[in-house]
Length: 386
Image (tube, rainbow, N blue to C red; front, side, top):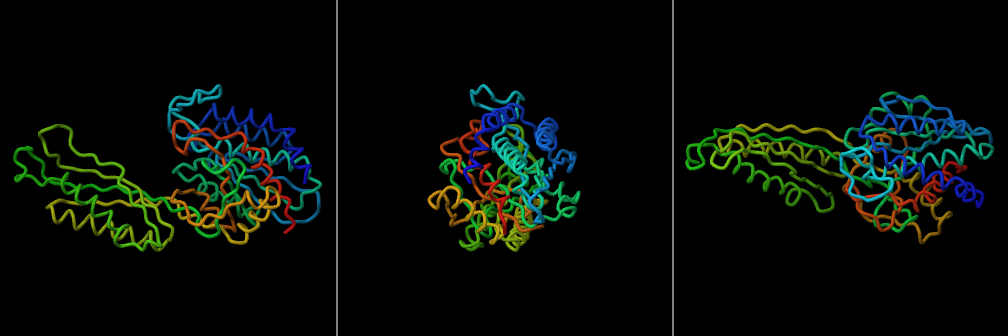
């Protein structure tokens, strides 16, 4: 399909400029008003039906093919940025203080817009409909759930939905994927240990929540290291410990927060139960009052096997078998595309970005060399006749 690459080549300079523009104007979760406007204008330019304001700032485009009756298929890209101050010295560095595209969503959005443009130019080759889901608030707030709550999948049920995510360290243009669990769940928690504070020189007259908190942190680690099978990974990280505000006073309250990552739904429930038990037991042992709050985040992302194999076949046909990597193990990061994958057959694949800084760092920048292969993958998938 040389015509696909020729079509991409024609618009590639514009796509690179578009990506740089999005990178320079990052917007946080549910604040993607400018980004959504740029997306809508691009889709309308190519004659694609557009709906805006879905899940607050989401956009959905619909391309109706002219090659006859066919399936409805979908693609999803995320649009939000992160609350990170950019450290890159780039002509298109973030112009919004304290905000930057540190996870590549500017690249994801650009690639999906590029695919929409190419497919719009070859409607006569497209059967059925292609739906383009531009999702807000992927970073920890779950814009996917907000969009799905408004019925974006029920109104025109797709046969499948595919998403991509840029992957630092994977050679540019290569594809990595895995059937089944590919990304973990991501839940958070708050713990309070409340006791009787007092003078630090008289600890025997206090109920010290700091020592109890230190003990609890070590105890919690045994849930992963001693209570979970090595074949059923669990990551439990305490990421904050706040207590006290001066040198010579033992505080009355210690506050701990953190995150839990699992690959199995049953494991999530077991970990939550054991954490609650450990908080209560620790509090009692140290004459404290313990409070535990668990906040459900995104579930594990499980790729549908048939959709994953289709993606692998298309990637092999496009770039050769040497450019397709099967992941032996899941990653313990999380993605709220998992909600799409719970509702319809779906798959996410990783797109190589080459030697760039890691996700969620102040020096990350999506590699423009990955735009063309990303667009080609989505276009080829949309033109599948299966």
